[in-house]
Length: 176
Image (cartoon, rainbow, N blue to C red; front, side):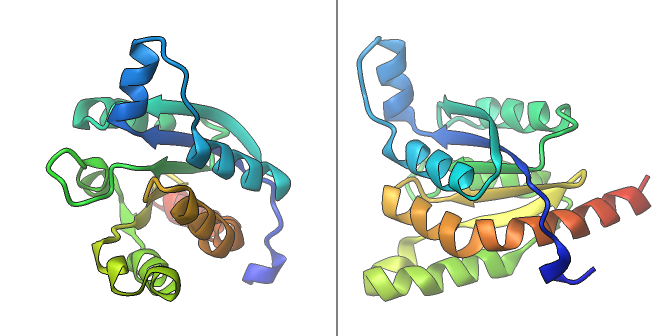
């Protein structure tokens, strides 16, 4: 099936990996989740559904638990992890998710950095993003800034997610 023939509405989970936001929740402090809200608004405006949206501590065990939970949800198609993609020692989202994937999509990070370069020039060198599939689901790791989230969702994830899911399901069905 060609990409233009894929028009399925998808179910998304959105995880915001942010130690600072997580700590604010623990303390009962008010905060704004601009990136998470941006992702939710764009996904829903495209006609898709957000099944889960949660703020996670940027911690390998917690992220891994979220990954494992995603695999148990049959009608979940696309999982987005936003944040924890920087280069500080506490940024562990990509290191946690990448070994978990069956297939990786190196072009996702390459295209994201290319698009980011148009806005941020050489600062985009510090940008890390990745994507891949497991068990017929698509996983995306994107930076946590609102502009990065908007860029990734509008320019890469929404246009390609149905096509990725179609191929991920084919691969998953043949591996059973």
